Length: 194
Image 1 (cartoon, one colour):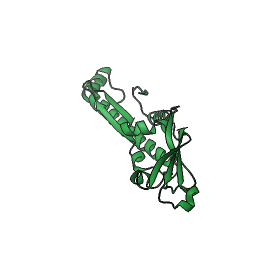
Image 2 (cartoon, one colour):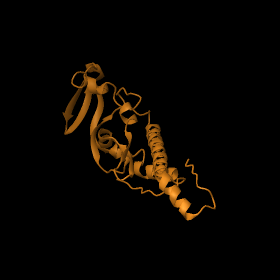
Image 3 (cartoon, helix red, strand yellow):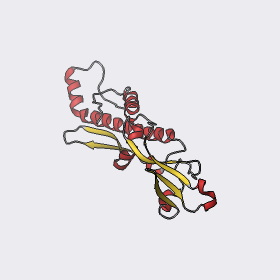
Image 4 (cartoon, helix red, strand yellow):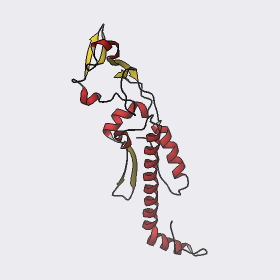
């Protein structure tokens, strides 16, 4: 909160003197409050993303939102809420309305799944336990550890092109929450998507 020594009923010359003496403190106090609120907003956005993921989010997704501020030489400050680089590439289709289709493995009922909905041990067992087979122009992921008698249980996934469902509208939700957070502040600032 800004405190001042300016008294009601003082002359304009007194007001000019107070602004010259304490003007920089007002600006610094306003910028600090704005940065604090934007940092809290970025934590809230990350919390919302974590809670919208079915089965819970993995550590990679939990570290997706990043807050940064840049202090410029002319006294202005830029506050940024950013989706980190690698996470942005991976989460683009679930945080925005991106129409790109991905070639991904669709698990079958025979696949053992993790809590997040992924095939258990896929990365570590690829080439050992799991193998990619092509039949009639379609690609399948099979479990080579299954016995020949259980041949129909061997297929654990099928490669398909599929669009990922948007789980959180990042731009609209963040902009809406930023307007709510900044609504109670008094001052001059610009809000933009970038």
